Image (cartoon, rainbow, N blue to C red; front, side, top):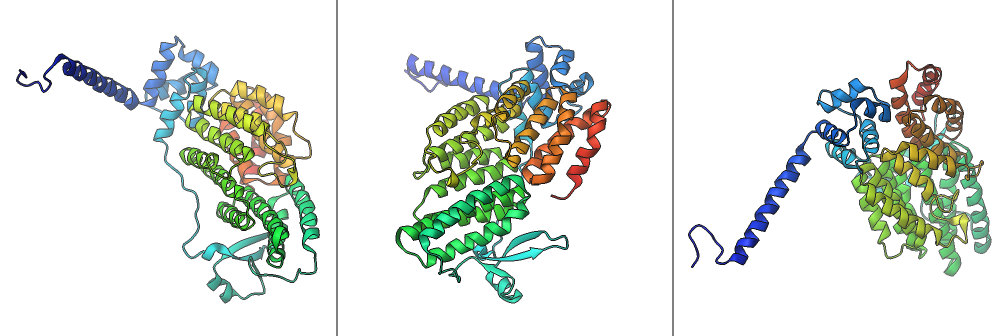
Length: 459
């Protein structure tokens, strides 16, 4: 007979009730721990390991007084401090994840409702001779007049060049333009890239069969690289537009893999906007895309790892890096001239691993890996080397080697001035925020004015 006030008629049901009740209690305890302020959790982890406040200050290179204020909720911690503490206490990303939950989300610029797919682009020149292409809708283009407009559509007067010769010639030129992009400012190569993309489209309109497909696929590679140079110039909206254009061209040429790779590129845009959840989601979509080959899947896994590192998910990050390295090692790169992604290194995962370790607060490990891997990069790849040297310098500074970091800054600033990069400036800004805490150090005082001036110079 069922007892009053108890819904279950037998011992089995009573046992199930006790288990469920325990789960509720455990959930409430876990929720309480999640609700614990970050500073209080930092103190709890530190004391559980028997680490004094002075020792944590030594490991993280932050003052004991500042750490005390953070633990007591008097001072809000920076994300850099949280990452350093997470690494110093081997918290496995827990502190980083807590900090990320409290940070405001940023937005990624999108396309306007009247963009009309942006097929009209106006060539601008400022009073210093810098060139830039800006998208505009057809109505705006007609109002402006056709003389200054480059229309990405229709055929042009390029029919005299045979299709197969055009494919060979433009493939060779693509390698040269990519090489130039490694050595110079984005604005130097962008007009050429846009014009050559248009020419390839026009040639493809008058071709047929395999030649037409080859011209469209090559045009998609030009468009994809145009998107990357646009991002390097700090024009995120244009970068997204050109990535979409690359997908359209590739699909018209029967190469659906570029559609998968476009998700990797979009994930990079969200990563620099500090939207790590979106980075992971886009990377996973690229990884699972039916047209993705080993290289694109490897690049997608690499991007997923970077998103996990930003969010403090250490085990997921390292697992994704392992997948990426295995996939890129076996990818078919028989034609590096049209390789999707970086052409500097066939497998950039080891450098990416170093940066992920940096984001996880394991800066000393990151420095060791940077030192080992950067020695293998070709000296002519200036943009590539400047990017990774900036990250290495930041890791060196955060590991407490201020004099060494400062000795690297003059050469780094010289290279950055040559190539001009909005993405590198992001890392230089982080370096500036790190060094400003140490202005009492003579080495820092010697280089900080030049670093500050470089960041104030328009990109």
